[in-house]
Image 1 (cartoon, one colour):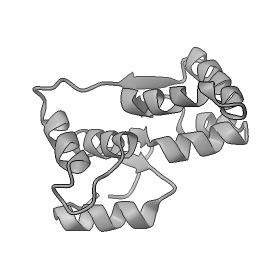
Image 2 (tube, rainbow, N blue to C red; image 1 turned 180 degrees about the horizontal axis):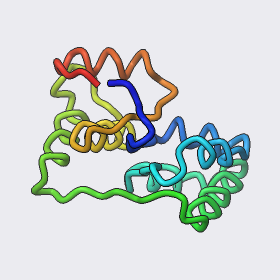
Image 3 (cartoon, helix red, strand yellow; image 1 turned 45 degrees about the vertical axis):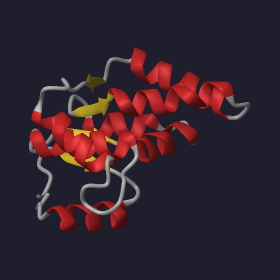
Image 4 (cartoon, rainbow, N blue to C red; image 1 turned 90 degrees about the vertical axis):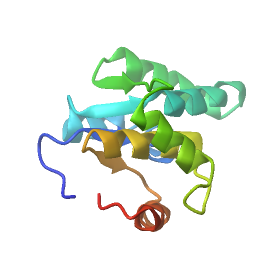
Length: 135
């Protein structure tokens, strides 16, 4: 799937954290303002950094980014199709077990015809191909 100006963009942990580490979330805002979606699983993963010496700044930057209200946090109900896909991805149903944030971003993007923002595209492409999906 090619991204258009209306596509929702679901960020995984690695991608969002990369922008947080270099303090350049302004790039995300400029490119995707109003379309940024961050799964709650991704936020929880980044929250763990607050207890590390270098990661506490990244966590603080996450809080600033959240405070800017330029994104929407997305959640999934345990009875939803999104959660079913998420459980398959984290449980290794398609071969490789995905991390929580990566799986949540992919499950939401699949269900909402969105795009996954990830800096581990080779791994993601392999997983998508195993599932028989085209994104």
